[in-house]
Structures are given as C-alpha cells and as structure tokens.
Image (cartoon, rainbow, N blue to C red; front, top):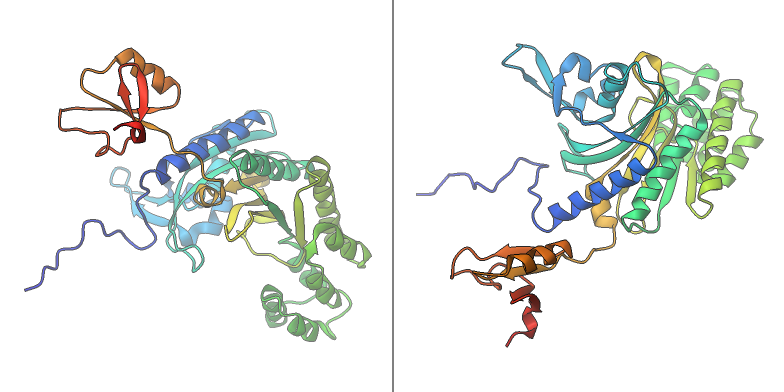
Length: 382
C-alpha cells in the first residue's frame, strides 16, 4: 500500500522557499538598492499586493492582464487582481493619491509580484522587484536618469561588467505604418525582424517601397550605440521615425556624458518588452550568464502623463553580485555577559543565545563563542 500524502515541502511550479543565507542576502541587497534610489531623491511608496481588477489593469496595466491572477473579494464581491508588475500601481498612485503634487514625481518601490506563467529562461512566477519611476518628466534626460541611477545602484552592491542595452520599441511599428504596410504583409515583416532573420527581412522588404527598404539596414545596425546611431543618421528616415532616432541619440549622449565607461548597445529594430513602452526601452546585463538585472523605459502613465522608469530584479542581482562575507555568529552561553553581547552586536555579530545547557555553538552553526567579554573563534578552541 503506497502513501499518496503530498510532500509538505512541495510547492507549485515556479514558486520556491528562500532559505538562509540567500533570503537575508537578498533583503540586504534590496535595502542597499533603495538607499541609492533615496540618495537621488526617489521617495518610497508601498502599494498593496492586490487591488480591484478594474484599477489594477487600467492604463499600462492592460499589458500584463494575461499574467495577472484574479480572485473574488469576499467582502466587496468584486474581482481583484494580484499584481504581476508594480509599475501600473505606481502610475495609479501618482494619478490619484499624489495627483496634486508637483511634477516630476520621483518614486521608488520594492516588493514581490506574482505571474500566471514563467518563461523557459525564467520559470519563476514569484519575482522580487525594486524600482524607480519618474512621473511627469517628458525630457529625454529623465530616461537617461533612470538608467544611470539603476547602474549606480547595481555597482553599489558589487555587480561588475555592466552593459546597457537600448531598444526602440516604436521604431519598427512606425516604419511599417509610414511604409503603408498593414495586415499580413506587416505581420510577416515584424515576425522576421523579431527573429533577426536578415534574409527574410530583405526578401519581404524588397518591392515594398523605400521606407520598408530601410528595414534590413535597421536590423544590421544593432551593436555599439554610437555605430548604430551613425547608421540611423545616414538613413533617410521619415519624420516620425526620425524623431524616434533623434530622441534615442539625446538619451545616449546624456548617459555617455555621465558614465563614459559604461558599455551601451542599441538595437533600433528590437521591440520586445512590455507593450506599454512608447519610447526608449532599457535592459541592463552583468558579466557572465546573469540574465537581465534590470528593465525599463518610457511609457504613458494615467491620463497619458509622460513617465519613465527602471525595474531591478533582486534575485538576479544577488546571483550577479560579488559574494559578501557571512555575518559572524557568536554563541552566547548561559549566564553570558549581556553588555559584551550588546557590544558585539553593534560590531556586526549575530548573537545566538543558549536557551538550555543542551545548546552548543557547533549545533547552532556559530563561528565564535563568547568567553567572558571576548569572542573566541571556534577553531581556536581546544
């Protein structure tokens, strides 16, 4: 006879328990990131985990509707949604609770989001976020600022080898529109661009007019930002696309002026990301296979108010950051000197007090033991 009782440690797909010391490390990283944000004038807000569906999915929230868990509120009998992204909530707060405050607003946040599905590369469905938003800032310098502050925060927690990837999500749709392409023809070209299929793009663009004929050059321009911008300058872009390219050049110039050593790439044909991006979009990577550390860009907040922001992913940041020294654990025997213990806590020790004579430093995973008023390393004890 088999026991069909589920293992109590089993969790739904995409959900995990964060255990020591990883959970403490992530919490410390989040607070370090938030300290950098605060230093640049970003004020912290704390939206709820869930709210009414109609407000959560309004505006930019519609872009994550398919990833949003829904449930019935037993009190109001209205449908609620559990946030899949924090940015739409910041937009709501800015438009309502902070609607009367002078613009631009600089807001920061940290918390968890839950998504219906993960991806092949990122199967996690519960994701930590820490981010910043500028609400009411239309200038390209606002986009540059959120990218630079995010880079500074990552450097502050020990992430090296950073690179900033800039994309122009509106460039391809604008060119297809100005080329007069629609329906199946536009869809095929968009898919070929998304797959980076240069041969298919060239074939599909052939005979579709001079504007569509620019798409192969746009695809091949991806690479270092200055070289990509040079390609865009040489193209006879129509007015709408030219405005997008000029805006990107201004953003890149502002970032390079403040961080000349930062590696910046630009892909003008790429338009991945949340569908609410209406200007430049950013992704920050670290060295090695760390994946995306941060993501963001320009969007429209409530009432079409201009906004831009960056979301950092503490799980990925923890994996990319240099390992920090573990906090030493000091065992406090029964009857220990409480004044000495307090002094060691002030020095950064975690003190672990014995609750009975059976407790031991080794069993409680301590690195030191309090002897009188001194902390003796365990390896020094005979």
